[in-house]
Image (cartoon, rainbow, N blue to C red; front, side):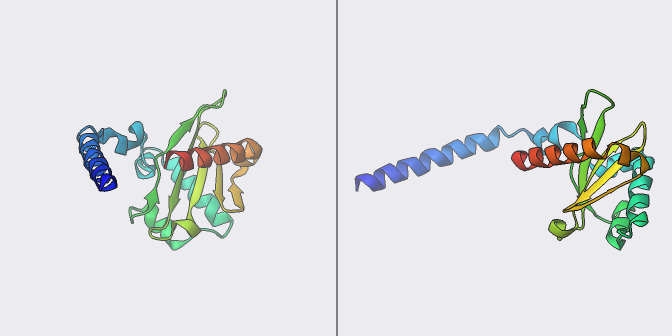
Length: 153
């Protein structure tokens, strides 16, 4: 009987705590602290879109869902995060096919001044000419960004 009283008290206390937490939820958290999502970035930075499509096409990895997604067809994306490197700022994010992210997720690392791009999916690492120069650093940035994303989610 004592255990039931304790359990009921704990449940009621927890429900009250959850109700209070729901009332204080910051709706801006859903915006990932203002980081823009990939479609917004692609609209304002068409060179990134062209670079991604070119790299995937040059390596025989340009799938229909990527083209459709880049043309507004409902691709799953993450916020694009700036990474301060001590040199030029680079940007990283991901995109994947809806309902199939595990097998289709591409992560990109992009430095806009030099148009350097690296794309990673599993063990596949692709880059443009400028991205080849920064490949080692970009792979490390992709790895760190990926680890941080897993910690945040």
